[in-house]
Image 1 (cartoon, rainbow, N blue to C red):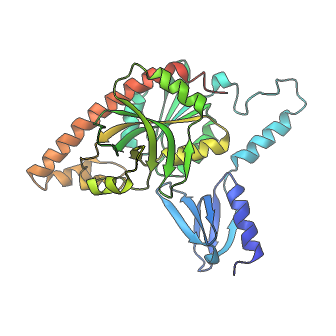
Image 2: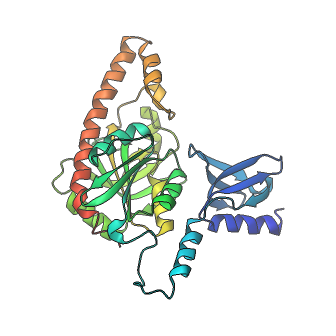
Length: 331
């Protein structure tokens, strides 16, 4: 039976807005961001943002709140400002006109296209430029918990999850845009986009061809095969990606407007090369090894590269159309 101390520690970890160090009864430790509790286990994004972990509550020996708590930091700033001669709604990270739009992608491969859209050159996992009249920060955050840390560090006025996706509707082709009405994780938890944000994005994309609206599901592994996508397909669910749910969850917790827009890389009836199933720091060597398998593998690579170029151009056009609305949805 779980003792009261562990129950209290788990409750504190759920309410905390930073990383925690979880000690297990076998003396091992995990560092991550606790985002969910069920009666018999907790779930957390790991520190490297490469996946999600599940730990049985009965296995927990201790939980220490070791990471930066963005909410506590915000409260401290507010306390320092209280009583000073400045507007009551002064934002914590500066004026709204100074707050960046944060463009979140999972992988560095996706960041290159986003960087071009904001007129920037990527440096590692970050690119800084402008989207419309606003400063824009593009970040490749890995899987899961990286979004929470990025939001705490950059204090954006708007979070946009964007990048490549696999289509889950047979009508969607490479280069088609999916504007999320909601996002869900693979445990079926769902979050709807705020209606004012969705309405503004819909109006901004009105002139863009091949835009579909529906739900995006987020998983921890790339849906490579037709079978992978068939398992995830549901009525109204249009695409699958790696990051949108985590970005939306972190933005909602921070009280920041968010939007998810994805471009289809491979359609429902298509498949990606097997080496794309798991994220890599770089894809050149995995692609070369795949090409050595023969002509069919080389054809797969060529087709994937062609689709990626189409998808990247399509997403850049969509982001350019969204640029005028980013300031209006920051509140």
